[in-house]
Length: 482
Image (cartoon, rainbow, N blue to C red; front, top):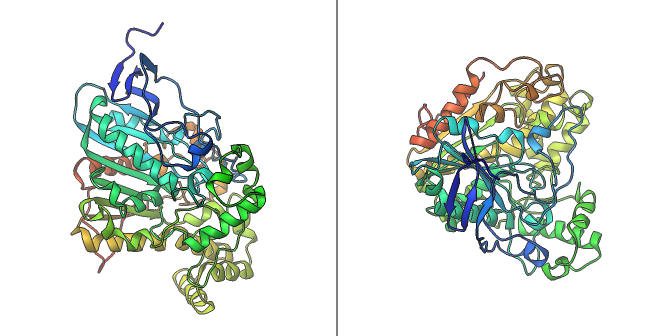
């Protein structure tokens, strides 16, 4: 029998039971769409049929099918969570609220990263206690990944993972009030692939009215594949499976088979006459768009949305340090990467010259990291910030996260994802500290988590994180931990 103290909330789909503790109330595995099974894996998200009685919202949901990710010597399990936990009903959200008490609190909706192939809201880094403590309702979202989520197939809508996030935001609009949140004050935020999805939402007409503010942490407003690039991935996937490149042919194939062919899709040459590989070969999946999000903001709700956006100062270190590649990189490796991510040999040379001028003491590994960071996150972030500032009238705020993790003998630095424990105010947790853990053996700087987390909460509450709006003529970011 449930404890008498367990809270029950009436949502549009039915009643759900959660858990109350010292941090507020938590409701887990709430479906925002029907289970994506069989052919439905390649269809738009369908409305959930609802339920009778009281649904158990005390246990986590299954997760989207996904491969295991290995980051060498660095323990990234707090970021990736448990991996694939099989089960049909994984298009779900978790809600952490101070109380389902009729309040009108800011709502923050988090979209996880993971290269469009991994991750879930079950990751330890996305614990919502600090947000609930600070009178914010936190919603964390699962969405389709990999082939079901992002492979471009004839007979299927593109960007199904993005459609899932849109469906989750509609669920928030309809259900937020039941959990003590204000559906008119929603901030959508995300990191890495999740941040890139949010950049796309800013340019998506159907997203209008679903959120008031957005936070883009280490995303890429120019990270989408062109249709031609997407076709190369689709052709390779169909060949590996021995079927036609259509949704009808993919529908009967089990998820295990989709995961089994992922190694065959890695390392594809996606350079075309009109585009370079925006993900530098790190993932065969991304959004598929005819125009990059940063160049299409006028099509969506961006002009009416406040934006907080930024990157970390050593993003590329995550892809080199744990594997030992920072030290083993040669000048030839740097040139090969630069050639891959730039349109011409001349532009590659110019970019390397600029990186060397900015870092006169840089090793080849440092330069390789700089090229990765610029390609994957910084260039697209700058373009998205500039475009938003042009159309939004001073509603853009820029940040840079510079705190250097001491992980891996101090080499990890201000790498991709290092800001997350500070955003969620978890930087003092012991499972993040140690030589091979995300923040390293040194304690986090006193007050930095409160500063970063507080800025995110202030932005979600008022639209002002605590510093002046971005000026494209003088693009000076707010620096955290520098």
